Length: 333
Image 1: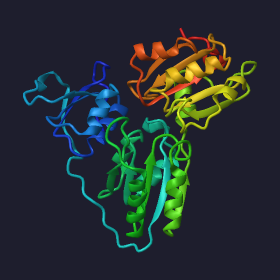
Image 2: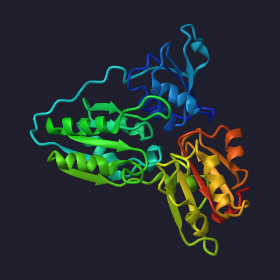
Image 3: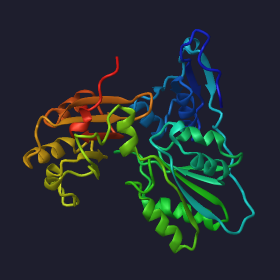
Image 4: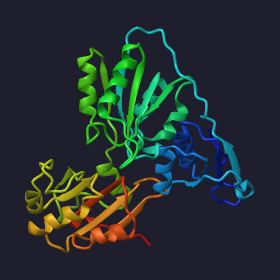
């Protein structure tokens, strides 16, 4: 699905998607990648559409009598009735593809080729869904997104889907955001497939831990400021029994600290780093929806970042960066 963009006056078209199907999130991301502003009309939106609206990527309308005359393009969702693939092969395989931070342009060439040749695509909510437009006709698409505090597919079920489809002789691509082996649970999926006797390939992806700060103009290393960086998960607070990170040691390392999945726990994380002796004036930033049209950046310091992030409604997915390199680059005119 390709539009002729931009409009003759150079502006981005305002597109309304009607009759969205179960793969409407793919339609939306394809339109966003082409620069469109997207509204979706759905009296009963599914969790993925609600998630996209919550991330400010689309405007969602539930009314039936929406005025369509104010849109440049009204598009009936072309993926509303996608077919399921069949195959005669007896031996399948699984390809774990890291899709990068979201925009199609940051998916590798090898990753895109894997998408094009897949019989089955098992996709996360943060994967570059616009790539699915290039899937071969009849390819089965299975969405297994994990929406924060919302729709959730257990990892065991995802593993079972990969194994089941591959044992049926299909070429299965597991398409994730970022890199499968950086908090992507790709190792668990690898082991599940190997235990079932299924061959596994890996196509590395650009990790959001590196890409998202770069897209926001924040280097993770900078000569004379820091000689390295560390990437940690912030999905639980430092005081939670499930946390095995030595936050006190992080405060003493002198490295850039990159925190993934740390939106909800950000106040507790920064408080722990402050107690461990990290300077309150240490530059810090949080970036939400890196690389997407709704990308938002909040800068501050270690002491003020949680309040600033809350004031700007920074939500998941977001990457937080702490360290002198955050303020290393000169602002562009």
